[in-house]
Structures are given as C-alpha cells and as structure tokens.
Image 1 (cartoon, rainbow, N blue to C red):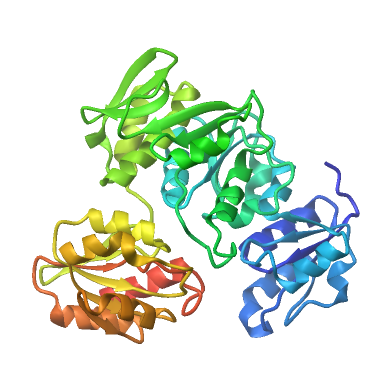
Image 2 (cartoon, rainbow, N blue to C red):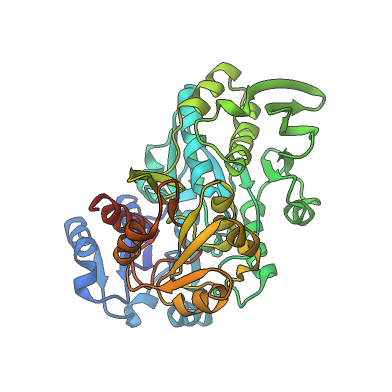
Length: 448
C-alpha cells in the first residue's frame, strides 16, 4: 500500500504509537502524534519524535489531530474515548497499529490471542521456529511494536505476534497466515461494558479475514471458542490436554502427539518441557500445532522445548532466602491467570493481590486460596475489594506498596513457603505496566 504524503494522526505516544509514527515517516507519510499525558511523562518519547522530525502535541488532543487521512490508535486508548468518538462522528477511518503494520509485512504472520498464555506462546513460538532454522521475530504486545520490525521481515520468514483484544478492536484487513485463540475467559470487562460476548467478539476478529489458505488454531478444551468459529472457511487445527484430536496436537500418556488427518506422530514427552505446569503444556501444544503444520522436525522441536526457560514476569523464580521462595507473576492481570499460578505450587503461599480492578470475580480461586494460601497482602486501588472478599476466609492485610508486602513476608513467612506476586489486576493504578510492577517487586526481593 502506498501511503506517500498521507496525513496520519496517531493517538498515544507509547511504544506502538512511536513505532507507527516512525514507520509512517519512513514510508513517506506525514505522521502527527497526539497524547493526553503531560510533557514530563513523555520526555523519552518526545526525544525520539524530535530526533525523527515528527510533529507532536501533548497534554490533550487539539483540532489538529482530525486533519488527517486516517487515525492510528494505540491499544491503551479506550474505544469510547472522546477523541476516538469524535473521529468516528467525523467519519475519519480509525485503525490499530497492528492493522497498519500488517499492510507492509512480506513474511507470514502468526497472530496469537487469548485471555492467558499469549506471551509464553509468542515467545516459545519464536524460539522454536528459530531453533528449527526459520527466521522468526516476536512483536506486538511483547517486546517490539509490530511497526518497529515489520520492514525487516522477509518472505519465508515469520512474525510471532502477541495480539491483545485492544489491538484487534480496530482491525480491518488484518489477515494472519495462522491465527491462534488459546482460551477466552472473562477479562477487561471494564472496557467491554461488562459484556463477555463483546470481549469474545473482539478476540474472534483475529480470524475475520482468513480464508481456506490460512489456519485457525484453537483450544479444543474451550468449546466457546470453537463454537464461534465453526462456520468459518479457514482450515481448523486444534489442541487438547484431555482428548485426541483429528487435526492438531494433544497429550496422551504424558506424551505430546501431532495428528494430521489420521497420520499420527509422537513428538516428545511432556517432561521435555523446561517450563513446568499444566498451563504450559497447553501452551506448548498450541505452538506444536503451528510448527508441525510447517513441517518442522521433531528432534529440533524437542530441543527447543527443552531449552526455552520461560518468560519474565510469568511465575518467574526470583530468589530463595531463609527457605522462602519468591516468585514474580506480575503478568497475571486476571483471576484466571492467578488460578493457574496457584495450581503450580504445593507449598504454603503468601499471596499479593490487587491493582486496577477489571471487574474481577474471585469465586474461581476461592477453593485454591482456602487450600494453599496462608495470608493475602492486598495492594492498589482494589485493595479494599480484595480485603472485603477474602478477610473472612484467610488472614488478609492491606499494604501501601510492594516493598511493604515483601518486607512483611520476609518476617512472617516460614521456611518452606512461597511469596507469590500474582495480582489478578492491571498495574496502571501504581505502575507504568506489568513489567514495571514486576521489576519493582524483584528489586524489593533482591534488596532483602
């Protein structure tokens, strides 16, 4: 697509917004970046924009943002924000950064969404394909913005693209070669009018433009996803931990198999995975469904699964001190993620919960908390909600900071127990993002 001299307004000067602006400038367009934040919060971004010679504004959106051919919106900008509503009323086309970058991608796109597991699957996909000799980049909601790397991707190469529902909200022609929906459970309902159906519809947009030449990979243990897609023309591949599937990957007798219309291969034992936990077995099956469709060799896949050591901020071991283990699971921004984290430990747990609430219902983890958790430290803007729900069930205490939680656990936790940061909430009430939250937690632990 030729965008030479097109006037493109970009809402949000975060990572994806800056990436889109740089790509637009490189391709001969005229980008303009607009952000609500104050100047002091955008010092790094302003430095980049001025270096690139890209016009910008901060502290709010002026009329200049509507003087454009189309708008690119960052995923953190709510769909019902005044600036986007005004643009829609003026019939200005609005697209996401993922949509924009995809116009210029010469390689294959492996787009990965789902409520949980996206980051791990994206990273493991990239690692496995690279180990198999296929050049693959990670991008999207992880690491680099898609716009930052898209021009580097050549034919016969791939992008493993972590794709959130926010990034899918404003897609139009986005058409990945492989689309993966790992699971769909209630999350971000604060953004989707407390409607699970709206949230699901956003996820399903990942496959909206796929046809019979493309592949849709879905979790056969999550019937909600398959029922939504069953009438699509796309080729369907599934993965399951509970049953054999005709086309896709599954576990049987603690081994991973790949089936392709009756032809079945044993690929590797589940124990070959360096990362442990039943949720990571499901993540590996999702990756297996893609890499075997691409005819990658079993030996290379086994080696890749064995050498992948996980993702930062996802049940990440930090250190052991006086017999107490400290784990950073800052990526757990919903209750479903915490459920998986709690099931990964058989030791007494001290649990840090709270942050920016997204309509959480804690009933799902109640039984596991009663069984394994000795104490909960409640933090952030949802601390009182966490306290009110759990205080009658388990010892619960409101804390002002992660540092306070870590220091209290250091005094209270006995040898053989675990302090787990798995907050079930977004981080934006106290931190820049979940990575920032995880790094603050790890620093507090390492300072003990």
